[in-house]
Image 1 (cartoon, rainbow, N blue to C red):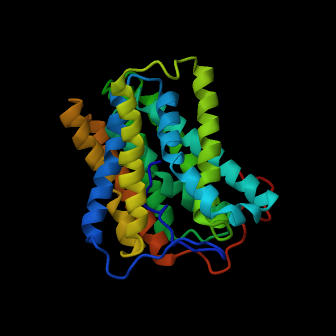
Image 2 (image 1 turned 90 degrees about the vertical axis):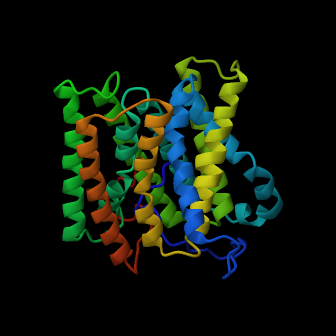
Image 3 (image 1 turned 30 degrees about the horizontal axis):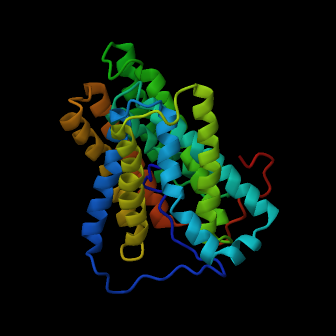
Length: 333
């Protein structure tokens, strides 16, 4: 998943979470690790574009290969945590998995229709939808700066999509690709909002295993419905699938989570604005893909809006009395 500024939240360990705390003296510089992580997540879009497999198949193996190493750990160390799970939390984690699956399916598919620069920038708009969702579902306050940031980012999205109307094409169907990227951002926001509430009660590994297992099953179903082959791929494709799990997954998001124990969350959040830049540079070098003028101008405006929104959310922090996800609302999804 593309982790965006504003989706980085303080880790709150529930009772019974047996995760090992990180030493106060890390063996590696957290800033160096942060740079490696941002570079790693920047490779995701280019790897998807390099793959000739259907988008849902690539997404399926990306999540599957990330989930499989967690299963032995979950069975060995977290049996008691799984036993304590209530039906409501299990349902919530499962819905988060469905949202994550739609995020991956929509974003990977968007890369077939629009430029890497546009797709990665738009899917990074997740914090805007997190802010709106937190206001609607969790009764968190929207400050003037957050509203201004959201408006600026939406204007940037409009500029990026306007290129299609004026013939400044960044792909076979940029409007479709940009729309899919925004759908991916909305679904990622739903995943983040669910996790903020559920992680207060569920240990990290059981939560991730449930979410990723459901996500894997959903992506498998989408891949089957698309009708593409599931296993008949050359070695190059399997290396790309593994690279998606190891690069953006292990070296990217895992390391980002580690840096949160040593750096302020605002530093980690803002640094993630480097992902669209890194992905655009890699696409230019490896794919000979140059972003259009509308993409560059609109992308800069979107990133400014994301920065303003994420910075203000990091400064304000969540309310002290945060209600449970979906409480007192008829439509928690």
